[in-house]
Amino acid sequence: MSDEQAPEPNDIEPTAAETDASETAQGEPSAEVADTQALLDEIQNLKEAQLRLAAESQNVRRRAEADVEKARKFGAEKLMREMLPVADSFERALEAARVMEGFDGAMLEGIEATFELYTQALAKNGLAPINPVNELFDPARHQAISMVPAPAPANTVVDVVQTGYALNDRVLRAAMVVVSQGSPSVDENA
Image 1 (cartoon, rainbow, N blue to C red):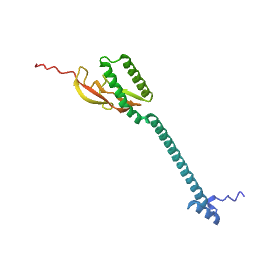
Image 2 (image 1 turned 90 degrees about the vertical axis):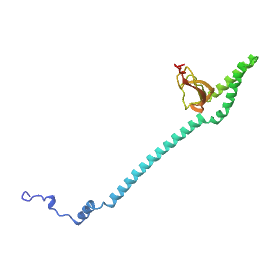
Image 3 (image 1 turned 180 degrees about the vertical axis):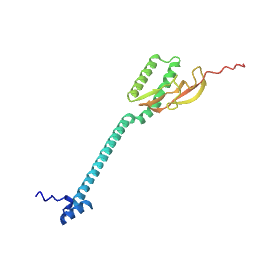
Image 4 (image 1 turned 30 degrees about the horizontal axis):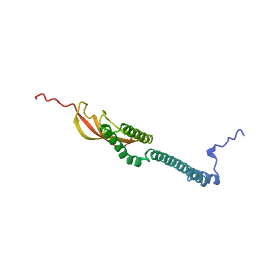
């Protein structure tokens, strides 16, 4: 056997079955490989669909939680808007009673106590007054009805004509205010 050499792999002739198998492997994939690839593609598509559904479900849950929170915070907005004229009437009554001569002191104390209870009940439900005296004018929270010369810096609120209100930091009604033009200028020629 030493005289005989082992045949080189390239020297061996393939059989007909081996030729068909190699052509299939080199050319089009076999049916099993195609089925496997199709199943792998389907698995990948299903995983992607599952991820999309999970993300959409999470988004729906977040939106629902945000809607519930918004409803909790601002669900009473309509009622609070309807209560604002009552607060205005209370304020006007108190102002009138304080300046009226001969008004019963005990009656004034009762009105003040009632107004205090009323404002506390509104505050417990998220309503807060906007009373910006000596603050800079903010058009998002204030409505200027006039400008007057005043010793305060320009664009500073010097008087509140009607109290504004915010419900959980959202302006329900802007405060009607008088704004400073700044210090009156002195005419040097006079």
